Length: 361
Image (cartoon, rainbow, N blue to C red; front, side):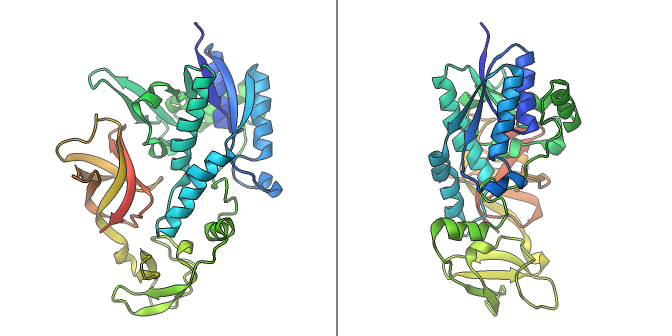
């Protein structure tokens, strides 16, 4: 029987090329654009996704490839599972990565469930990553893309065994984005040279603090900038406007550059330090998802770990703790490890697992 696949189509070249590849391989493809957020009209000109023009591009590609195509409204779910979590994290003094929550709760939960209702055997997306079954381990594994510059395995660490078994990432085997654009052009797709989206879709201007204030209707109180000894250095304009490692926009005059090194929600203070104050060797992470293991390993393991999307991997020892959290100790100090971001563990090209950073020291 012809395998039926639901293809998530954002209107960009990657998801369009994914659809073209699967159609060429003989899959019965259904294209779906997820309506997640109501953007202002001028967002069509911004460097983001999910605009009206993106949906039109996806529809055009689906028509070109002879696919059925739908736009599905997930705005209420997106507000609950992504935007509300984003806002709550900032209010806790964290710096979240909403793309991870979008993958976890939207693409590989809401869309995955919709695919099952449509009788699909799998879903496919334009992510740069690979999936393989390891018979020796008896587990599905998530692996890095062969194009390391585009690798997106970091934002996919929350995938379950069931999801991995029913997901296709056709672009993971491509070593060069130019190959993907060439394939799209040869397939006659209008968006073969379309610019990649980079901004968070619901904050197209990048002003997170302004978005949160508008979304919540709250005014976040000003507080003190202090040094590591508690001495007042100045006034900040609200906890939500700052992140660990930030240097610009502090409004502090000092003989040496100062950086945000800690956010103290309890007393609404932000600690500033010179560069050396940003380095830590240990972190704790919650909500950990183990992919390469059937549950947490019983003893410490050696891995490489990434603490931001585009950060370099660093050698580390990982120890699962009795309360369900995970401790990661680095061989060398790491700069600006930030609560709310993900720590993702690797064994070579294999994603061992990942979780949300709660603290670093």
